[in-house]
Structures are given as C-alpha cells and as structure tokens.
Image (cartoon, rainbow, N blue to C red):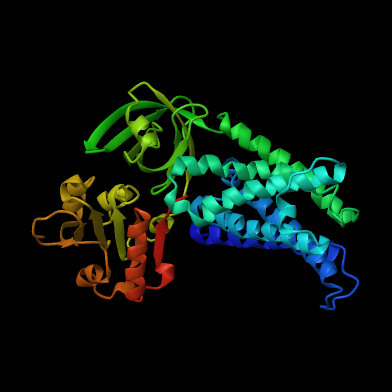
Length: 440
C-alpha cells in the first residue's frame, strides 16, 4: 500500500478513537432535571455543561500527552510532523474546553469570577478544587505561550514552559474524585482510573526515552564544513544500525538528557550502517553540534518520515523540488541519482548564491532545470536565476502546465508558505503538493 495513504488511514482511525473517547460523557454525566432555558434552571444547565466540557477537555489533553510520546507513537506512525499537528490542535482546543469548565462552575455556584483563582486547602473538597485551580494556572501559561505568542518566544524557553502541561495532568487527576458531581457513576470512575493508569504508563515510557532506551549510539567519523555555517556530519553505528529510506529523518541527541533535534539524512550506507547528515548552524544546539569531533558519540532515534515516499513509488513522475537553504537535504540524492527518463526541476531559494549548499553538483545534474531564487545578492541575475522570494511568476516562467507536476517543498516556514500560495494560484491540486514541516 502507498505509505502516504497508509499514514492517512491511520490518522483517520486515530480521529475515530479520539471522538469515541469523548462522546460517552454527554450521556454519563448527571443530566439536569429539565432542559428548559430559564433563569431558575441556568445553574443546573451550567453545571451539566461544565462537567461535560471538563471531562472531554481532559480526554483531549490526555490524547495530546499520548501523541507527544514519540517513542511509542513512532512504532505505529511514521509521519510524525502530521501527528504533531494533531497534538498541537488537541492542546489548543482541548485546553479551551477546560477553560470553560471553571467559568461555568462559577456560574453554577453563584460565585464571583475570583473563585477560580483563589487557592484554599482548608478541607478535602477545597483542596480538591485547588488542585484543579493549579492545573488551570499551568494550562493558561502553556496555552498563551503556545497558541497566542509562540512566534515571539524562542524554541528553548517555549519548550521548558511547555512542560507545565504535563504537570497539569496529575493536578487534574487529584481534582476530580472529590469534586465531580458525576464521579459516583461507574463508567466515569472506570474512565478516570483508566486515565490514571495511562498517565503512569506513558509517563514511564517518556522517562524511559529520556534516559536513552530505544535510541542507538553512533560514533562521529568525520565532521566537515562545506559552506559558511553548513556542516556534513558522518556517523557510524557503535553497535546496531538503522535502515533509512531516502528522504527520512532522524533525531540526534548529543548526550544523555540533552536536547534532541530532527535532521534529514542526506545519505546512508545499508552495508556499513553509516549515515551522512547535513545541517546548518542556526542556534545554540547546532552550534554545540558543530563543535563535536571525530570519535565523539551521539544518540540516534528514528528513522521517521514519509515525505518523499511517493517518489520511491513513481521515480519518473514529473517532479518539481522547491527548497530553501539546508531544506535541500531530502532532495539531493534523488537529484544526483535521477532516472534518465525523469523530468525533475529544482527551484532553490537562498539569501546568497555562493552560500547555497550543494549548489554546484545540483546545477551540474539538472542543467537548465535548476533555478536559483536569490533574495539578497545585488548583482544582476543571469540565466536561470531569479531575485526575490519564490512566487507564482517564478514557477510559471519555467514550468509549462504546472498542474501536471508533483511538488515537494522543504525549508523555512515562510518560504514554504510562499511556495504553497504560489502553487494554489497556479491551480495545482493540493494532492500533488508534499511538504516537510519540522516546525514546533
């Protein structure tokens, strides 16, 4: 079966399971005596809706926690960027449902708006309510930094703030048993204790992954600077090796408990198990990675990805690659080893022509089907060069009948957005556009 279709079917099954896990609460939460929307009944209706939204919201947050456990979900899913989008969507909208829960409880109890923000541990009930408030505080911080101001926060501070979401779950688990008006229901109790068990299991699996289980140790054979701030990293397995398909990526961790980041594999040797990765120094993580020497070791997790799997099935399909900077790495091997009958084009976006990784060999392979898109060079463009950023006019100038091609896009998020917008304007069907998105 086509790997892309297989991953899509898996996601549809996942959506079904997520929906299935939330629908029962509509019926098992204590129902109001009447559904009449009157001033006398508004508190009863508010209590019912608050309970349903609270349980559904926690269910969605729990799914978010599960889908964030790459060491487990990676065993079933290979298209992790798409899975991370589901993870983000659940966090964004599941949290909104949880936000509505205390607001409706406040209405039901006839309390002031400060009720949800005042900690009180004077009794068992008040303590249970306050555990919920602590969870609420943590989720507010995570939601604001992830859904509203993510673009203004660098990755590392955001990541550490994001961990508060995981602390919010045990607070919720402590909150419900002594406050939930429907907790006497057998189904609710079964569900809740199942959530507790799942949290413990997936929490343990996360810790297992943090301490290196499931990762393989690789030795650095060589590290070579090929352009300013661009390096080739050659790795050899210390024990076992992994099998990698073209276009897939791995996570590299410099040492136990350090951060791990995804990198597309430039090339791999199935006989020796050696891996070649090309990367650009963007921040502190890649700066530290560039300082590693031959004989140093790193931990590898993967491989993941289905980005170019369609090319493995249809290698001679009319194809346009659109890459930005180091986003060229998934395409290099395809272009170098292209079938004679293939119709491959490359639109390669960079700030400066002389800093474009692998430019010479790619241009040599593609000849007139190689197009430079240069944004900051001041000299006049020559043949097969364009200035500015990728746009509809650039593609239309070289590609006749754009809707006849498949398009593969990889690079910075702004470049990918521009490329997709250009293809939409050129009436390219969405099913013929493939993107690799590592954004968080």
